[in-house]
Structure formats: C-alpha cells, structure tokens
Image (cartoon, rainbow, N blue to C red; front, side):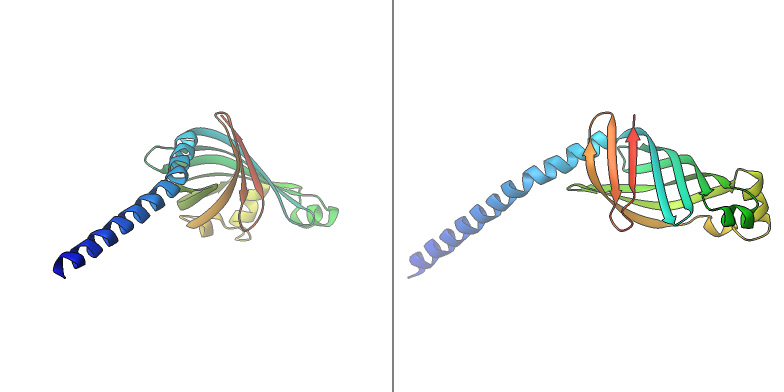
Length: 178
C-alpha cells in the first residue's frame, strides 16, 4: 500500500510540475515582450502633449524625458496655457501663460502599458503674465513643488524613433520622437 501511495504522490508532483511549466511557458512571451518594451524606452525622448481641459483653454506641453535602464527618469520642459476666448484674454490681461518645469521619478512597464511615478517636480513662471499671477497668488507654482503622481499610459505605438502614448484616465496623447 505504501508503494502505491508513493506512485500517486510522484504522479501528483509530475502533474503539478507540468502545470507550472506550462504556465511559465504561457507567460514567458509577455515577460519577454515587456522586457523588450522597457529596453526600447531607455534613452531620450522629445515629447509633445496638447490638451483642451476646458472650452477656450489650450495647454501645450513640450518636454524632454530621459528614461534610464535603472527605471528612473528625468524630464525638462515647458508648458503654454493659451486662452482662446476674448473674455478670458480680457480677464487675464493676455492670451498666454508660460511655465518651465523639471521633474524626476521612476517607471515600469506592463504589457502595452507604461506607468510613470513622478516623485518631484519644480515649475516656474516663464512669462510676465505667469509671473504676475504667481506673485498675486492666483496661480502659485509653489503649490506644485514636489508634486507626486502616478500616471498610467497605454502604449499605442513604439519603435526605435517614435513613441505614442494615451493617458489611461484623462485620454490625452503624448507623441514622442528621438
């Protein structure tokens, strides 16, 4: 009877091993593809985002983002807020606000996803109107110092020289080139 029990246990071990091996083989292509995606992201990207968060308001963000193999990143760029409605131009005394920003953080990839965790940012006014609003406390950039966020993007396309992302929640796109 003991001999038969060992055979059953051995058979169960073989079945569990085969099951574990098949699961590993099924997930291996996704892991390999994720690793390949991460390798393709490493390097410097010049990116542009254009958003219209409200009617009469256009946000254009241009930045350089450097992804490292250690899964860290830095970014450096500018943001222009353009007022498209005459009432807003009159209310703000101009039609654009300009800012410079920099930041850093970490990143990970998942199948067809890029998750960026920004651990700190620094944004400064870069036009007289932006500086005036900052000094008046209307758009105080000190409130954004060391801002932390986690953003998830769908990787729409990725090649050696081109990257297109869509923000998962806010649905804006970022187009990047090398």
